[in-house]
Image 1 (spheres, one colour):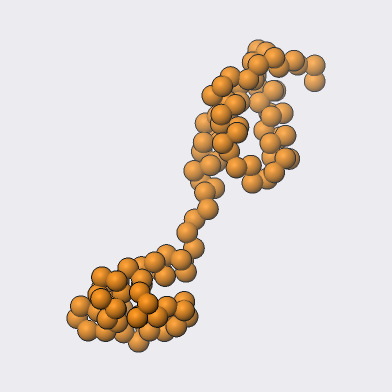
Image 2 (cartoon, rainbow, N blue to C red):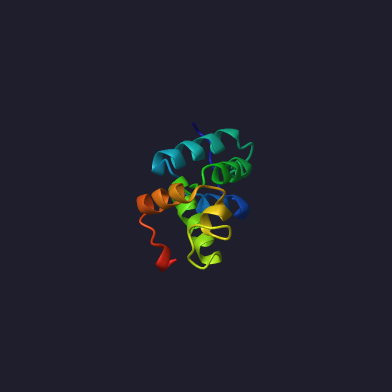
Length: 114
């Protein structure tokens, strides 16, 4: 390809720098090659919207265990460390006391330390 790119708009440069590039250098290389191909002039026209869309969809999600742990800890704090009873953490989470206790053991949560 005999196309010469002489400039990269600042918006494109910022988007390229902010993106995580989970595919490492190969993903970056492929993206730049496609941008060069579709650029009609000497300024690189990187599809910034594509990067923004990718970064919002590929953001690492909170694991189920972490979300469950956080919810249990919050319920324990809100209930003053009580697991059972009408105002206990289990009732706040909508589960049986024994189920909550099993989850707490599995996640290594102590009701006294919450």
